[in-house]
Amino acid sequence: MKILVLFCKKLEIIMKFCIGWMLILMSVLAFTGVLTRYFFFYSIPWLEEATRYLMVWMTFLVGALAVNDESHINIDFAPNFFNKKVKHMDANIILNILILIGIGCFAYFNFFQIGASMKSGVVSPVLRIPMWMMYCSTIVCAGTSVLFCIKNIYLKILKLKGVEKA
Image (tube, rainbow, N blue to C red; front, side, top):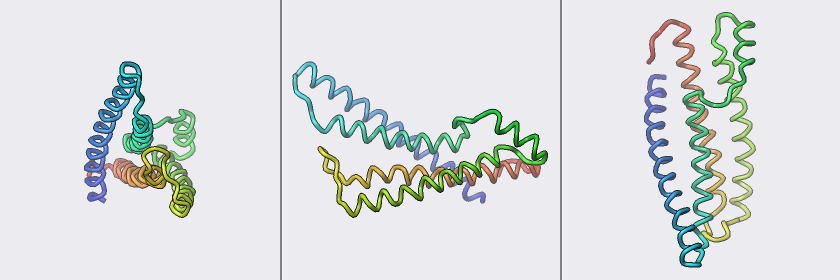
């Protein structure tokens, strides 16, 4: 499990690096699109589509990082409720298990979407990239979120046992 913790730390660094570059590229593309549209009266068709797809990938990568940091939206009554019912357990363990179940359902149905997209051969209108590549952002998010959830559960259990971080 220590390997998982180290792997998640490296994965987090890589994901943050990719998100940073995606944000820079998306900003440059959006600025270029506005510049050409309003000053040169010409719109570059693929800029909007590329910006949109970068935004989608960034959103899913950031969603996985939110699971890693446990900074996702949390309803306050759930930890309070679980802490009262289960005295010797951290409520975040239960919440991470619920997140795992949700991610599992999300990934399960997205595999069907990706399969259908691969069979149909749907491509994006301007860039002509296969749409299943865009839908893979959901699976990347789900896969990394599962790893981060398992890591978080492991670290919470270690904390309950009184063992310092791995």
